[in-house]
Structures are given as structure tokens and as C-alpha cells.
Amino acid sequence: MTPPSIEQPSIEPRVGAPTAEQLAALREAMLLHAQNEVDAAIAAAETLVESVPDFCEAHSYLGNTLVTRRRRFADGLAALERAAALCPRDAGILYTLGWCREFVANALEKPRVAHQPVEQDAATLYALTTEVMLRALDCDPEPGLRGDIEDILDVVASATGIPWDEEHESGGADA
Image (cartoon, rainbow, N blue to C red; front, side, top):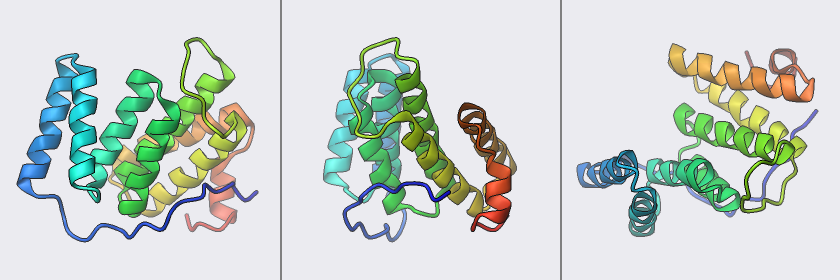
């Protein structure tokens, strides 16, 4: 089964690492979040991605926070897609995108709280989750992250009835 894809504008992967100042600004946003000042944290992250558009870690943080803390699903997934496009070989960013897709798919299947709508249905989001998690595995993540990725793949397999390990071993991506 070939997973659906999401139309992405052409984004060149980032060259180089963020500066110390950029990382400090991201840590400040995260500190605001830890102090339960989520709206201020989101505003700080939005300012950061506007001023440094190729800062994939900031896009990832913003997307994760929008999805999980404000249920702004479409906005959050868009930020995460941009992060993954900017840093396509970063297993942590790919994991965050996949985890948030699974979170949204689950919320669509079991609606409890109002949320921003998304274009995809749960089945599509689950398929996209599997695709991005398999890409994350192909990045040779450290063992702890590998286990987390495999856990999400197991959750998706349980939700969809489609085993990921057989797909990964025989479906195109090298195990």
C-alpha cells in the first residue's frame, strides 16, 4: 500500500545549524511553555520562525505545541511539515511529525474536544504517520528514539490493522 502524500511547496533543506542566539530564543519559548504561558510560547515561536524561516527545530516545536496544547491541528501539522521539509534526515523531527499526525488521527476518530479541522481523514493521517515513521527509522535514530518510533508504528498498526514491520521489510524501505 502506497501512503498518500501531502502537497508540499518546494522547500530547500536547511544548510548549517542554528546559531546560539536562535537556540537560546527557542529555549526561551520552551521555558514560557514550561511556566504554563503557552500563548506567549506560541507567539515567541511564531516570531522566531518568521525571522528565521529555515529553523526547523522552531517549526517543529511550534507545530507540536499548536497540535497538542491548542488543538490547532491544520496549523500545527503545516508547521511540522515545513520542519520535516527543512530537515528531512532529522529522525527527531520526523518522529514529532508522525506522533502529531497519530494524535490528530486519534482525535478525529474519538472526538472529545473542539479542534481546528484538517483536510485529511483519520485513515489518511495514519498512513502518513506510518510513512514518516519509516523514514525516521531509515535515519538510524539512537536506540531510545528508535523504540519510540516503533511504539507509534505499533499504535498505528493496532488502529488500522495494517502491520508496519512486514511493510517495512518488504515494502520498499530497507529494514
